[in-house]
Image 1 (tube, helix red, strand yellow):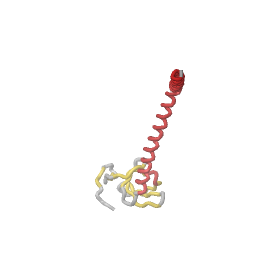
Image 2 (cartoon, rainbow, N blue to C red):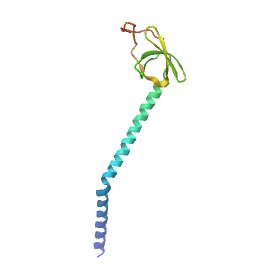
Image 3 (tube, rainbow, N blue to C red):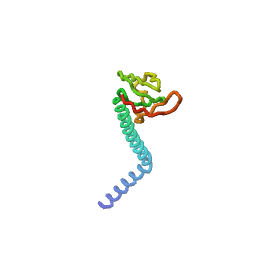
Image 4 (cartoon, rainbow, N blue to C red):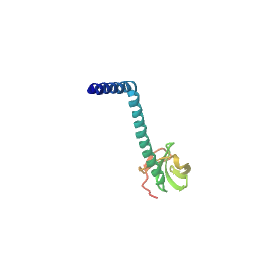
Length: 124
């Protein structure tokens, strides 16, 4: 009789657990997947943001940059949040906020007034 009672209790517990997962299992799995995707997305965004901030902190005169508007130029000076960039063969001086700099470029090229692209080997 004692063994019969334990079997009935275990069957009832098994049925209760089975019913719970039949009703809520998919929702629980979806919530766990959503939390995991949010966690990994947040980590990669923080990593990308940290790399971008390090790039902005490394701006110095002489750096070749590309702005978010697609303008290529050379940094002439940096004063706080303001970056002065010389552009083109006539060295037009443009003023940008630090956040307007999209990347630091390695290619030492410059465009002429005629639209030709020439290598600029001049280092400042």
